[in-house]
Image (tube, rainbow, N blue to C red; front, side, top):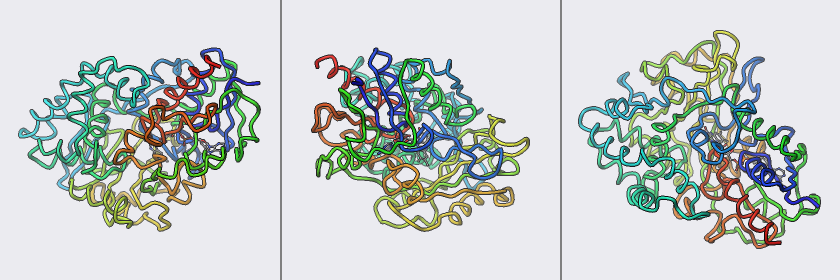
Length: 469
Ligand SMILES: Cc1cc2nc3c(=O)[nH]c(=O)nc-3n(C[C@H](O)[C@H](O)[C@H](O)COP(=O)(O)OP(=O)(O)OC[C@H]3O[C@@H](n4cnc5c(N)ncnc54)[C@H](O)[C@@H]3O)c2cc1C
């Protein structure tokens, strides 16, 4: 009998498996797709030699993850690559606000009236970042906070809506960049704890940057999988689990799946009925015949570029997709340009380019034209650079990965109390109605992103249980 079986080889499933194997437990992973990776993968989606990331591309949470930092992933081929600027947010006048590793450079890009306010916002947290991120990503507390005072101060600033936080800025530049940061998890700007979302992304940039993985995001998953195999773990691909009976006997079962899928597989009835899924995304992977012709020079050297003319436009786009059930006319976009730093991703002189905007859950339309009209506002001539594009709306995303229900790339809305309390109100969110069955996907705290912390926290719950039995 195995000690643990993990269903799903996404970053959280693989991290949970590694953490258990490192502690001497026997582990096997079962993955529906023919390769490991879930939302951290790389594929030739357009033309030969163009290596695209269909899901995650920029990794502020990955490089800052206490779980990943404790694993020897570099030894297994993971190399973080940093662009000159982690992120730029261009404006229609050809200028840009930036999120730089340097607080001073970032503050200066907001203009003289907001530079001081920005410094006062982030500087108190930066010296304590490593402890704060560990405490924050272990919420609800899987271990006692190491620095409860800083965590409480962070809560005071972050738990109110982001619009409260940005009211300390007087000009649009800082407000807009910050609204875009909140948009990375698709939350409406006036939602509970959205200030914390923006603040985490900003602090992550100052602490360690927003890198891409050399060769593509697949190298994160491949490093986790190679380490797991070295520890004696097994990985079975092309193995979709439909019932608990499909799995070998084990002392614990850990699901890197949506709560809905888990309830079906394990026969938990309506246990997760109150769990809400969020809006979807419409993703485009581009093969380009050269760099994106950004008007703003800062955008040409940034790993990530946010697109949204001002905070009102961004707020409208997020509200349209998440509250009004319609595709936005002017979508807020997140774009990543790995080729700025990684020549291995495309043939010489060519580039891969990654972009998405938000759409309602399950939306079946085509957002390509609206997204490219947005790009043309900030990079005139963009369309002329396109050699090929691969598009994926909610139905395609959900078909590729069952966790992206309705195209929701967070596996569960990151809004309201579900930001913190997911998949349901419980002191042990990784436990389920069955004492030997656990859930470790991004439907559990700390939520979406390639950081492995849900897997790490769930593994703790599993090994406590295995030690007792
Ligand atoms: C378009 C897009 C862009 C993104 N951008 C970023 C980004 O830039 N940075 C970032 O940090 N994050 C990003 N994310 C989010 C990130 O990819 C996810 O939050 C992360 O992958 C979640 O990890 P996970 O292990 O919980 O689940 P997943 O990565 O979704 O993995 C779940 C795995 O379980 C498998 N599975 C599901 N059901 C079964 C079953 N019944 N039997 C067997 N296997 C099963 C799936 O095939 C999958 O491999 C993005 C996601 C998408 C889709």
